[in-house]
Image (cartoon, rainbow, N blue to C red):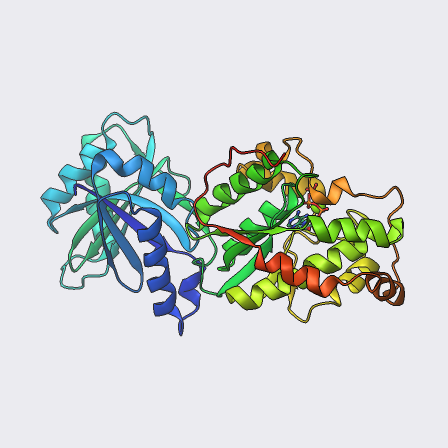
Length: 391
Ligand code: ATP
Ligand code: MG
């Protein structure tokens, strides 16, 4: 345990009343994501300190950069609160660096220390000027030397690594993400996690029309966004019979409308079974026929649950940019067909009518099929690829 990381909390510090809940949740999430490492955590209302082995430090920092609720990560060095120890450590930190200018920023939380922050800035500034070739620049220094004088000792650090911001995952409870193999829904999942929503995923598969590779792709996407959570499950719904019945009974132009109404109905049922408060998906206004406002009205009307669409108002290019940033893009563009594309009609209705949708879907006994599909739902908690083929 020879390295100390200081964690600066994200947006949660503004939520005074809930602060303890936030911090407890963040601590649990951090413990969960770092469970393979030997660490100890100490925390107060302003900061969290993680002690770890120096050899693990880089790997831990990169994992922490994915945890929501963290504003900044600082690799810091604890010394006894006396000028000599502080000066020695600062010289050590500045050694072999290519900085030309610096600024000292002292925070004196421990008022027993007799020197004011301003005065201490000057003392240490003078020391650095005398012992190095660095010059002072108070506006745009190459390096800021932070000195935090606290009750438990003095913490010295230079650069702060940016955290991912957002709220600790779980602070809002759980949502059900309709996760396909496309570009949009993993991004929608990531954005929901960022606002503190814990996720379960729901994937509709239609073997043999969709392949095991398509399912593996979804599992892979779930495992990528799970790096931001550590807690994600994937529920897989066998959708073949429902899709085939739709295909047999419903006029072509309404196939997608009805299919999506079935998906929403199933999602609502899974929400109630798995205690999810909302449905989340990757719909984006106007992107395809089923995502016009008129389509959304007809499709959404089968559920009373709120449906969150984090990418609703983003352009495809903006969604792609996030997908690249979170590393889902390369997996999303693998060419395995999804159930939505396999049964895609030539001319899907853009302005569906509610009465028609209801009339067409009553042409087959969908309630029983939904019940059966839910009974055969598979829940995946470990993200290992399946090798067997459906065929
Ligand atoms: P693309 O990036 O190609 O648009 P997509 O997954 O967003 O892929 P859409 O047809 O736009 O595909 O579907 C809209 C949304 O519906 C998806 O973002 C996803 O939330 C949900 N969805 C579609 N197909 C499935 C599926 N097979 N299983 C679960 N959810 C699905
Ligand atoms: Mg889409």
